[in-house]
Length: 77
Image (cartoon, rainbow, N blue to C red; front, top):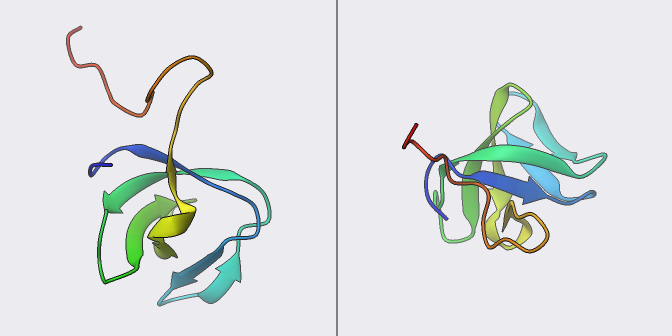
């Protein structure tokens, strides 16, 4: 995954924000990857208007059935 990719975060995943502390995702969410590795285990994502940290093992590339990865932006237009 690269910076700017859309990522899927399942329900019940712990996220950490310096301003809001630790919370859980109440439902599956989509976020934008800001930094794929901020530490040994965490990635930084933009979620619901704020930057938060989440364990890399809990983020997945956003895909559509039958396609590899739909998180890339096609700039050919």
